Image 1: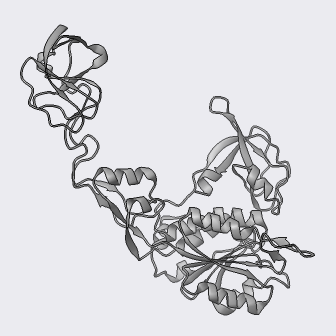
Image 2 (image 1 turned 135 degrees about the vertical axis):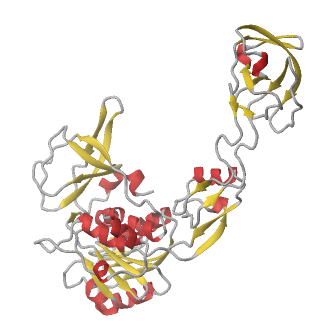
Image 3 (image 1 turned 90 degrees about the vertical axis):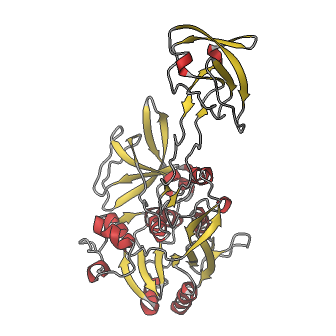
Length: 430
């Protein structure tokens, strides 16, 4: 994606060029890069925030940068258990003997250290005034109230200086961060009990298909259980969205129109699964064009070609294919980065790995393909990607077997040992 598209993703007002539909290939399909850039350019920045306590802030997106009001640490302290000394008393080579004048534990206020004195000190405890080094206890011996050790000992040895980590006035957390446990710990370390975050994205989902049945109910002739509902709800929960399930929608144009209107009320994003093809029982495209507008249709990707983007009033709409693997892969490739950008996250791209192919792909395909794979090997020998023997978009067990996706470009042939691009599910689903 270009820098101009990155900028457009954070603006609500788009130029006529940004509103233009992506160009299509001869087959009438949009490339993966075009589709993702198109979606991110339309991912409007959030404009509502709330203040939340640290325990509830994990996974939320920081709306404003945070600056520390204090130095961390606020005082020089010992990084080891040992004895705090004045380096002037231990700067020469040879054996040194100093009188142990005090004992300092973490949280205690020490007295100043005089010439020829040492202080028994523990990790994290503040250095006494006058002390500027710590000799670790393993290098010391005690003789009554005297401590003995070999010099020289330089100033600063085993000491964490004041503001070693953070200086007062320093920005510690940037806006647009998706908060992980380490960010929450950092906020706490500078005394922040709560953080400003963007409001959760409200996402409504529905599933199209007369054949769909809720799990737990008996299956009639030609019926299947609705797995996409639970895949999508799990994916949205991992992204800390507020999800609403509209339910299963009958395969009629009127029912689909009604579902779209209902889903868009109060939602920032509507996601539909199924009904995206061009058959007589697929009505999402027509319903979307009648209730809102369609801006993108079909991507040159496998699985997941019939992917759509449009708008229904103020709500964005993304339509995913109905096959369960297509739903999962389409969400990982397109919906997840779109949601992250709409949540205010700065960095939304997934970081791939380069690994060796542990498989052969002898027949080039006409579309870019993301195949279910998992890694074998180790760091020393190198990692290899093995692929599941059944890559059909209906084979959901392949996604459970796999721990990621291998990206095979259109027209590519892969031989064992060739380098391939691998996207771990730990990145795609988190």
